[in-house]
Image 1 (cartoon, one colour):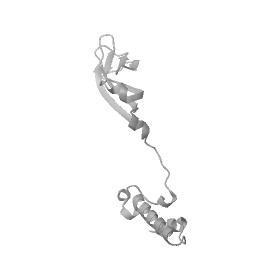
Image 2 (image 1 turned 120 degrees about the horizontal axis):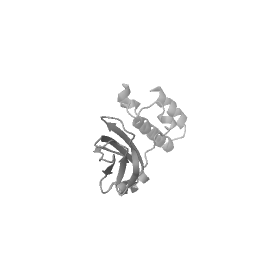
Image 3 (image 1 turned 180 degrees about the vertical axis):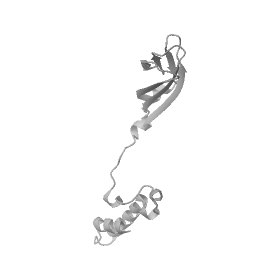
Image 4 (image 1 turned 120 degrees about the vertical axis):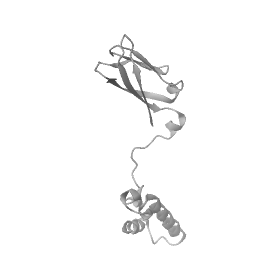
Length: 146
């Protein structure tokens, strides 16, 4: 999980500016990346000092120049570390051909992954209570036909 912060700052007569972040910034974020853009002109601006004590230093600007900045940080709180976002998760075999958001593709709820899961679980419980004549392969084929 990434947090993004941005703003503008005006550099001093030495071409430098200190960007101060909120008091809690270092406690919540790690692995910083920086983006700097000059506004109204060009200068070879750079991050002179990386984030430390909730602030970082920009240098290389022309006196009085406005700099647009963006900082991203990876969340390092306990909840975020325990619940990292998975970029891509493979579907179960019975979910293939179904959509997370079927309405976005012009389909109804019967083409949703949730619907496929309910049918799979219902069939699974019915099968285990009766004979095991219907296997998951048969259910997969049945769901795909709909």
